Image 1 (spheres, rainbow, N blue to C red):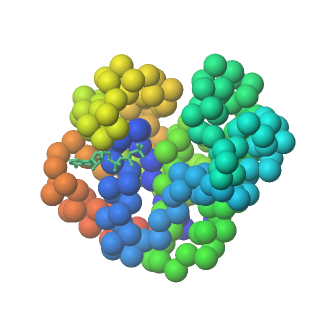
Image 2 (image 1 turned 60 degrees about the vertical axis):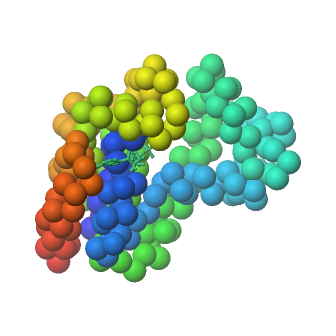
Length: 199
Ligand code: ATP
């Protein structure tokens, strides 16, 4: 397995913020959310299989996934959720590995929101890096960013690994409870560590 980092964290913990800071230092970020989105964009590679399995009404006029309709379906139907994941997950993994092979940075950092939950990513990465903050901080940031209520944010969090589970699975942890100024020194230290580990 080539040296690679798996970056994870709960909703709104600060994964994208942290990924940008690693990218600025030379890491190649491979973001599975971005790949998932492109698979279900107009002409996306997962759209034929989705239309096959669920029907043409799950594609909008542009040929992209009708996200609101699919969200409503998988929210109430576990079998549909499993069927969608069976289509998406192997394609996301293949897309991520292809992007990693083409990457030219100092090392690859996979950003995987559900790394701890999904299991299959653990074997592909040399280190798991978790972005951590207190739940109250996480809730406040997501409420502000997405214009959601506390109850809505808590419902999303309830479907994810707990803070304790994520910390238990992590090799390295970034403390993102404080302002952005507190991130840079932590990222400098970890980036130097990863360059050493890679060599
Ligand atoms: P998601 O899981 O939803 O993709 P994420 O883990 O990528 O989220 P970010 O988008 O990086 O999280 O951060 C969530 C929100 O909190 C954003 O609006 C971001 O600007 C803000 N934020 C992140 N870290 C900090 C910080 N240290 N100080 C202040 N605001 C922050």
